[in-house]
Structure formats: structure tokens, C-alpha cells
Length: 129
Image (cartoon, rainbow, N blue to C red; front, side, top):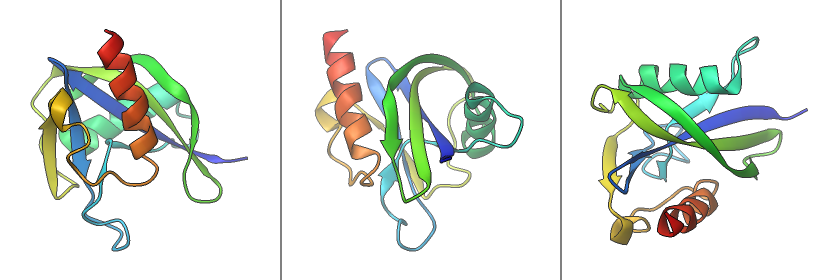
């Protein structure tokens, strides 16, 4: 059984929120979607809401799932959802930086290997409207 990591693809006015990893050292500086592991007894959607509160200080509304299970390191899979901001402005509490990427900037950051295919899928989804 794989450990599930959830990721929030927060979209606002066609822009996507990217977060720059602070740790661990081998991932630091790479860009990802905010999120984290699902805790025991927690639904995936509850984990998304909690992680966005903890990492960004925002409340989100969870939308449609993006793709299926995205492979991470052995024993882990990522599941991503589109999301919108409900309250607050994102603050980098656990990341080095945050950046809102306009459509022409979606691939201007150094996405982590696991997050890059998700960004490609999201770009296709958003382009179709």
C-alpha cells in the first residue's frame, strides 16, 4: 500500500501557485504544488485543507482531481486537485518562496520531477477552459 501525498493546484485568474521547497536538501530550491501526507483517519480532501492552512495560511475550496496517481519516490504516490482560494493570501510558511505563474510562465520555474507532469496536465486542462 502506497503512502498518499496530496497536492493543491491553486488557481486564481488563470494563474497557478507554485511553492519552492526549503527541504530536504536534495529537493530544496525545486518548485512544487503545496500539500503533504494524508494523516491516519483523515480524508484526502481534509489533508488538502489542513496542509494549505499549515503551509500557506489560507482556506481553499477543493475542485476536480487532476489525473490519477502520480508516482513519487518508492512507496509514495501523489494525488492532485484543482483548488481555489476561499480566504487569505498565501504566505510561504514552510517554503523558500511562492510564485503565481501566469500561463506563459507555467514552465518558467524548475518543477520537481513529480510535479512537472502534473503541471503539464493542469496547463492542458486550463487551456481548454
